[in-house]
Image (cartoon, rainbow over the protein chains, first blue to last red):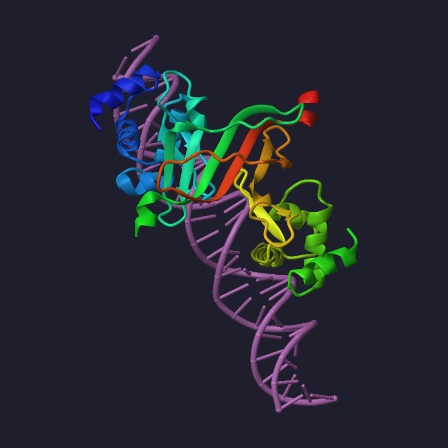
Length: 139
Length: 139
DNA sequence: AGAAAAACTGCAACCGGGTTGCGGCAGTAT
DNA sequence: ATACTGCCGCAACCCGGTTGCAGTTTTTCT
């Protein structure tokens, strides 16, 4: 991912630009899938785990990325597509492949919302479908 | 929960009856909510963590209980209602209260299933709605 | 019943993802 | 230049979950 695109995006969200932040954001934007902290660690060998962690914290607070819990025990991150907030984009469907252990963002499929009994106030939805992805079911 | 009810249920599923298993199953059946390993640990002071863990493993394999990942980092367990399998019951909606940190089973609300692109094979659904529960929103 | 095998349990140690304290470094402001 | 603030790497920690092992109980086989 072009460095300047990252810098621009960081500045737009009011996040101070550093070399590590460019690297992390670039890796996430390049990735065609969600990435865990461990994924980023192996991708960016030179960068310390805690630095990546704190970078993601800042990114999340500033709505540059959001996290998804796909039930695998490790949180996944992906860049927000929305303009300012990503509360709505947050709610798209994710698919977890039990064979290749990848988590897919089905961004064009918004997560369904059921009617809840009186008194329940909804803030967010975590909708994960698990099974076998097209790649794996071909083999 | 009556001891004999537990014993009966264990035998019905072909799980060997031990005192610990009666305790764990009883605690889960009594609970009006899902329970984590830690919850069971504090509830059953006398029983070792690893024993509870292995007991839950066996229960899950024999479809006495199933687990839900509510995204809090600790897996929750609840007793299966179904006769033999609980693949369908598994798919009901759960609600996680961000204030009191309890996970509710909304057993009468089945988890919705979206249409996925060609090639995705669905095995299970993880549908967690997060927000504030009726109890907490009253205060 | 008695011996061997299998299953169950508690203890302690481990594992891995996530998190934090701290000291050093870098950039910015005064 | 000096003081301040924020960023980073290292190491250590935390916590839920998991495993190896040894002692005990239960089952199985004769």
